[in-house]
Length: 363
Image 1 (cartoon, rainbow, N blue to C red):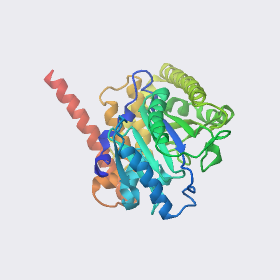
Image 2: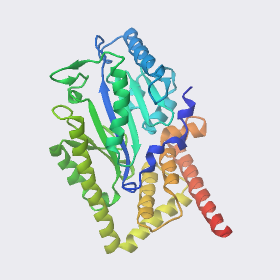
Image 3: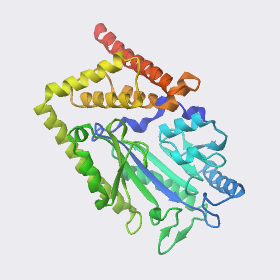
Image 4: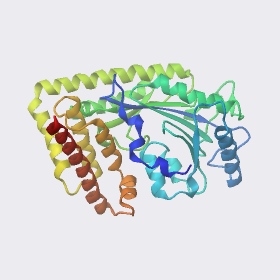
């Protein structure tokens, strides 16, 4: 199968949250960094070595008969930049892998919940995405793929230090666990900056929506572990779970306090955001993200009921540059993207509201 099946906006099921934490915790990601023995790291090896690594890893997983997950192989070196950008926007590959021109590929499961990046910073990056707060479930799925590969490929492993990785900060378990959270109330009440500054003391870090070096677009933040050496996988997961649940409670308390003290102001903010998306002819990605964040908050607080979260998730993906230009069918300048973004989101929002009104009329 080719890349086209993975360029669709409606397959990102990991964005749908869960029944317990879904209004605040959007998704969970587990990533395992692994390398093969007898090969140099990707930043130092030649094209022949890269092809050999790709061949070994791909052969092991594509021919797997006793592994429940079925993968498709996508050679990123032969893909247009726009299509790689879409995979980044769907969190299926990293920005670093997308930037590589001559090497790099990815194995993707049909449901897009598991991806195996080949020849990024390390030879192998096993990633599992899950909706909501499901750290233990995501780790279990990632470990199934990891254990299978380790049974067929010779990993670089040291009895003292654990899994050997390109970056020393990943040595040990090679595990990076992260949780994407929607935290508008903590942001609006100026509580996020102290929280972000405190995280390193707990062995955690807060990043933007696409990980390291990115902004917290639309009040979405990724909370992830920094320490991989000296702790077991379960200890890392449990520490992160505990902190995320505390942040969840703080966001819930901040939302309730805002609703009690300034219900009219919050309602106004939510409805203004909805009005902008219904009427705007020009929208930057930042303004669109902020409006969608306010609307999601309004839905979670029961202020509006006319737009389901699935439509907001679709809008969040469609506002990104890659998806916009893929939908338009050609490369767009920044100003053209702002116009097309406003058109797409306006149509999605109005179409959903028209559908809702039609249902009410039938009833």
